[in-house]
Image (cartoon, rainbow, N blue to C red; front, top):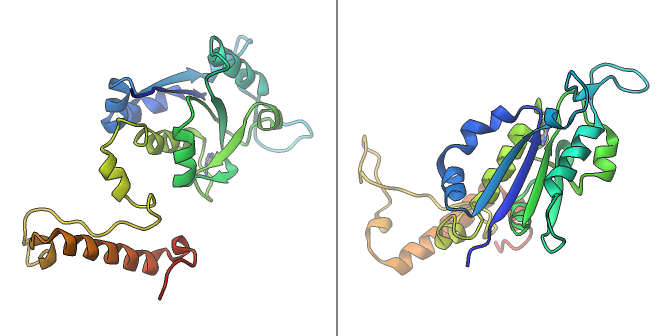
Length: 235
Ligand code: ADE
């Protein structure tokens, strides 16, 4: 039987998620009941009239810092009713986190309940990092205006690994799952504006095609991402 994954996202800009999550594989996977995604407005967890989620930094300095209370309140609320048997992990999206890799996505896809916190402005109160988040995740060495796009990247990469979302064979063949980049792919037409398709792919000889693909994947990886071969590349 297929399990179901619950993802709670806490953000001060919840509308940002509507179009991305309302399309394509994320929509289909949610539709099949394999994943449940709930978006929570951080402002719903404020206690003041202005629904303020940020404030000036102690010690002075430019910019604003996101307040801790709405994050703590939101996480407590989404965890309500969850039993201890359900593994739950709180992720804080931040450029200071460890960089997302396919191995990390695979690990996260096995967790029953993920709570993803999106930071914004100049930063997030350090207590969120220290006492609320289990893990900080960055999607790369650049600074976004907020954690929302990064959270979408995490969800998108994770949803396709949830059992039942994708054909198993597609997963086995893809980049990174075998530690290699993908081999070149072609489809109809056989010839387009004088550009052809490698003859071998039209040969029908499945064993030769398999070997050709393997060798092209290795060659591409050696040229573009030798770091992925990590010394296992025999010259
Ligand atoms: N928030 C801002 N920049 C980010 C990044 N690179 N990864 C994750 N969250 C972020």
